Structure formats: C-alpha cells, structure tokens
Length: 319
Image 1 (cartoon, rainbow, N blue to C red):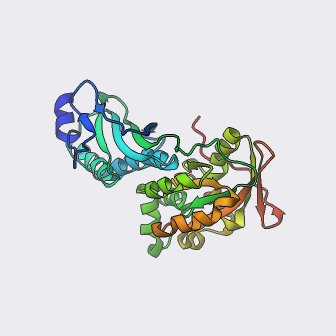
Image 2: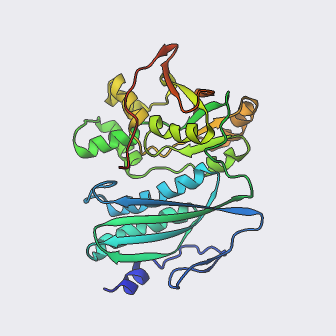
Image 3: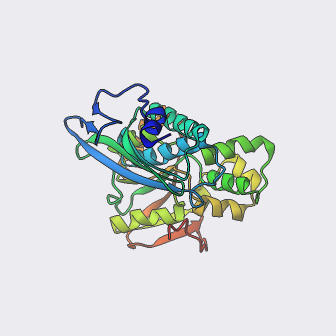
C-alpha cells in the first residue's frame, strides 16, 4: 500500500462534510471559508510514541485522544472547532491499526462537528501531529493574558483522574474494580469542554486547558497576565474514585501535577460571578472556585484553608 492509497482508504472520509470546506483531502491544500465577523484560531499538538502514549495503546483510543486534546485548546479560547490537519508518521503500514486509529479520529471529529481537511504521511518512528482550526466571533477569543487582580479562579470537572489512570495502566497503582472503568475512560478518552468554553466568552477574563498539571499550567496565565494567584488545595475538585484509590497526599499530588485532565482553568471578575452561575447551569459540568488572582506577579501561593501548603512538584516538563 502506497501513500496515496493509505490516504484514500483511511483519511478521505468526511463524515458529514462541512459546507465551508471548498477543497479538502486530496489536493495540494485545503480551501476553507471563515465566517464573516469571525477570527480564525489555530493550535498544534504532537504526540510521540514512548513520550505521550504507549506502543500498545488501543489505536481507536489514540485517534480519539489526538482530536480531543487539540479541540480542548480551541475550547479554552472559546472557539468552535471547524477543521483538522494530520501529519502521520508510521514505521510500517498496518491496515488493522490504521483502520482503528482512523475510526477513532473520524468519529471524534464528527462529534465535535469538525472535518479532517488535509495533512501529510511519511515513514519513521510513530508520531502524530494535528493542527486544529476553529472560529470565534471577532475579538471574543479568551486569552491567557486577561486575568486581573481580584478575579476568581475556577476549574471544570475533577482533577487527577487521568494521572491515576496512567498509573493503573503502568501497573504501579491499584484501583478498585468499581472505579477502573471511570479512571481508564478519563485517561484514554479525555473530554474537551467545547460548549462550555464558548459559553465562557462573555464572563471569563482568561482561560486555558490543563494538560500538564494545574500547579504548572497556571503559571502560563500568571506570566501572560502579569499577576499572581493563591489556590486553596482543600477546594480542588476530586472524584470519589481518586479519593478511594489514594491517600490524601497522593491525591493532592495527582490533582496538582498529574496532567492530562484537559479540564478548563479560567478566571472570572467578581462582577460576573452571578452571570457565570446562570450561564453554566444548562451544561451539567461541575465548576469549582479554587482561589483568586493576586498582585504578586508570577507568584503562586498554595494554601490549605488559612495555612500555607508546602508543595514542590509542578507538572509535566516537555524537555
């Protein structure tokens, strides 16, 4: 099987084709129509075997995760996912593996109403790079640079479950049978908070998704906004599965530094907190206030109630 046959067999499927794709897979480039009055948001993520996933990972889950982690970046900026490009490097062509990977990719793309419109394939160590493109009303993208002193800090969902799932897969942690399905789902099939991200456009002053761990990722907001923050670790949202599987110290470490949660971390001015409660009620996603923005630029204070919480870990380091 050659390159073009591979593309035709596995990646030319469009599902329900978008009307704004005038030219997609199969040409030298994609021709896409951005809506009038909208900005284009572009993000890129690379996943490499041995660094981001295990060689024996379920390829369908890998296809899902590749789309979800890219779309999560769009969600954090309040954008509507629209188009995807894929650069796929594989050591050999394995039809069964490719079929499952492509199925996971396409079904997740269709769920988020976005379409694969192009990319590249080549031979080499297994590596996946996706470029996701979304649209947001002009000037309404939520950036990391908008947090102000006094803003409240929120996270969606629960933290630490994916990191516990990784430990379960590695065989270094036991999880009771009643919690295993939930924990593995959170690790292999992360949820991008797309609808909620779009709802935050009118209330959030800054936002990002949590991919490398809360304690490390929040510094991106602090640095870009030139502010500080304090977080009350007693308010971190932890699932029952995490609390039942770990002692309090380990649960805290996984929640603060475990990574791969792909939950949204965002800030809201005091004047818009009431609007936030009303706005998010239809989405069914728990949202928890965990702290506030301070004026000490670049400084993160962790507290347990009124006491200082001593903590050394940060999160996943890319290098």
